[in-house]
Image 1 (cartoon, rainbow, N blue to C red):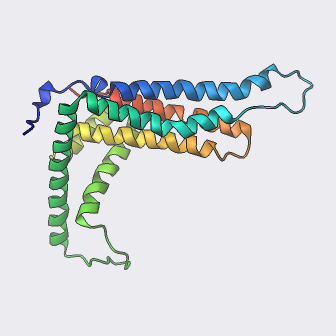
Image 2 (cartoon, one colour):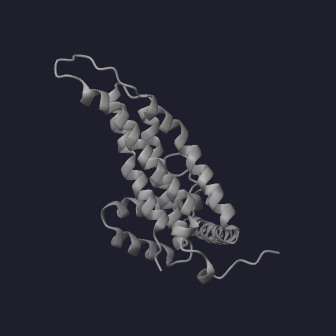
Amino acid sequence: MTIAPDRLELPARRRRHARLIAALTTLIGACAEAAGALYRPIAAASPGTEAVEVNTVPCVQVSLTAAHLLDRARTEDDAQWPAAAAWERAQAQRTYAARCAMAQAQEFAEHYDPLGETGVPLPTVEQSAAMDLVSAGAEVAAHWRTDPEAAVTLVHELAASGELAADEILDEALDAAVLTGLLALQEARSAPDPSTTAELCLGAVPHITLAVALASADLD
């Protein structure tokens, strides 16, 4: 039987996610280098050159390998901190059960039609519980971009009821930032021209940088 550690014995988030943070910073450098490889031939061309041959392959390679790089780093972090990973899973089960109970209580209290007023089936209790976490993470990520202090306050407010855990919210916000960055890189693969490819590759960097901040953030 595995005993979950006390919260105070868990590693700081920057230690817990050290390999993921390292992978994210590597990805930031890779995005910049790939875009630079595309722009350098243009910068080196003489003023009279009408068409400059550029190479979009580095940007495409970054896009194709980014998700695997981050997934591997997450797996390595989990293996490095198995007790912390087990504690997080236990916390997730507890808060998920609490959100399900709340969603079910609201459903009974409101007595609404399963198909809703529009005839579209409403989310199940389980779906509502999952959506609440995703919504909280996205909201925190959005606030963190402009006002980290307000985002921290929001995390505490969201966690106050016990239906969400602070670290769980931060991890979901981290996932939201990573996903946005990966989508920008994916879009770069089908960009209509090389300049747009480079711009989209660089456009992923602010989202990845935000992910680093969220992976490192300790509210304690």
